[in-house]
Amino acid sequence: GAGVSQSPSNKVTEKGKDVELRCDPISGHTALYWYRQSLGQGLEFLIYFQGNSAPDKSGLPSDRFSAERTGGSVSTLTIQRTQQEDSAVYLCASSPGTSGRNTQYFGPGTRLTVL
Amino acid sequence: AQSVSQHNHHVILSEAASLELGCNYSYGGTVNLFWYVQYPGQHLQLLLKYFSGDPLVKGIKGFEAEFIKSKFSFNLRKPSVQWSDTAEYFCALITGTASKLTFGTGTRLQVTL
Image (cartoon, rainbow over all chains, first blue to last red; front, side, top):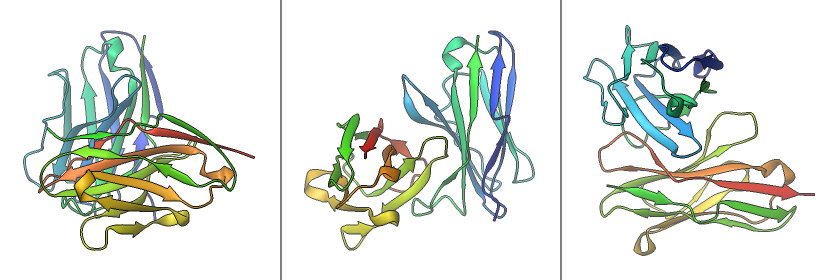
């Protein structure tokens, strides 16, 4: 079956611009996660959604970052007024639920470069 | 807060050599432990996971890991590596009733012919 998909695969933007990154989870997966992979910080959690519950935003690094999940499926991560330190690979993952025993399946990521 | 340490940042082995990658974590309560692998140009995928029961868990491609609670460790092993095992390996945990993964910094494994 289809895995997690993300778009775009690469995004180059200028400092100060806003960007939107999209994630399509595996069909039927109720939990959706965003992580960031950067040279300086490794892999770090950003936010997750579970069904209709309020998202856990505890990993978002600043208020320039926000995310939404429409209809319990597709999610968009928005970064406003991008900074050079936002350059990273943004990974999306989905799982059948939020139990710690569920496997999280990762997408290919979006490589963001802020000039 | 919980943390995961992977002390080997870059490991170079010849084909057929045995592999052990270290993973230690810092958390006093219940943990679920994972090893993920990222092959060149591919996305992260699960190698194996431990929740409870037998501390020796077997995963895909001949990998195994042993949970040693007293040492807060979850080392990854493979008796004989192949060139195709060249990849970056990440140890991760989920604590208690949480859902988010906390990752180690990763170990880059290079297998030479």
